[in-house]
Image 1 (tube, rainbow, N blue to C red):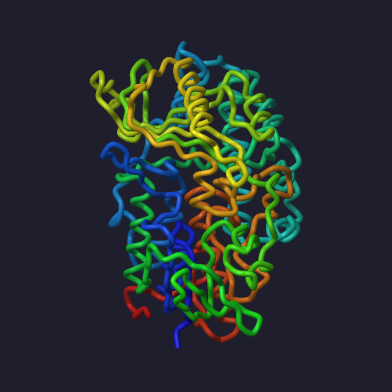
Image 2 (cartoon, one colour; image 1 turned 60 degrees about the vertical axis):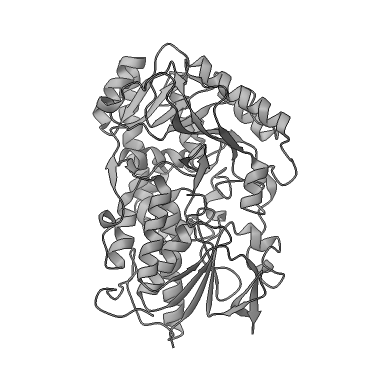
Length: 523
């Protein structure tokens, strides 16, 4: 009899683990409470336009190539993607902007023209340091088993490579380390922003997070249809392996029998027995009894103080003028320290930095002609905010105040957005509604301090048969990291089942060999 698996949630991690396990013969059902697949990688309808509702940056595409290959398929047959020439455009005022490019030499030249020769040399050294950190951590940490302390990872790196261990800089703060490379505070701010990719403050995050800059430097891709199209492609891949995806199907309880997970009870009352349950959502929902008392002890609670950033996200169909937008744009606050101090104090920033994704704009210089005056385009705007959505309602007047602050930040840099444009705003309170027990935190646990990365929930829980995956688990937040968590969960589950002779030995990308989905039947 094939192993029966129920996945709670159809986010990137859950879809990935489901596809890989089904390709090995498991009978897999995904129960998703919402009407869509992809979790945060959704689309939002505004004024008849479909706007990317979640992550917009696609990196480390080789991870997804591995997932599709393990299922006997090719990623390029399921999505249409093109590399971005301009990684992002950055502005601090209306006097100009700085572009970073896929070509690091072009970025170096641009930084030199923007801030001088010393800044260009600083960028070159920073880029090399970020690359070294990534190379040291890719196999033992990003693709490795979750450990509660750094010592297993250090053993895997090798005790003779003490230089590499020190190069990770876990005890240095990112903001301080950036000061070694960049005297210009604007550049320090630009590269400090990478901490927010995992929902953290550059003033509290370890310098290890410099590796994110290298991840982006390896290539940023634009997908037709956005990241949601990628999620749909993985869902289609999973279904071809025999996975059953049930949307609009909330799970009320993880059932336990004989000291192990034995199935799920749906909100409708239907029971689905199984051998393995995978929680593809914030693990804190388990700890806070959202899925029943019997499973609540399986993971530790994440205290509110340990939560990552939330966000005020505006989806707009709007005309703009005055600033030459590209696909990814960042408009920086004049006082970064105050911005994060206000967030730490539980308040949205009064003068925020703003990320703006101009969805209809390609990330190529040759194609960035100004749109006709008055023509509306699809826009997603993100402002960092505290994850207090479970105890703060964000009434309309506060949303309006935050929107005004966002517009002021854009205007300071020369971008004017249509006042009467149709739009929707998601607050931390809105995110808490979609992702309960998070307070609206969009990245799981914040990466503050050297030990934070080891405190993220791994695939195994204290309850046998119950596993976790997704962007709130190991190794980190973000689209490729969520997929890596799915890879790891599938690998650990296969290993655990093989040890009880319930699964044949196999290979899952990152360590084990799988049977070919094209030559052997699936469940």
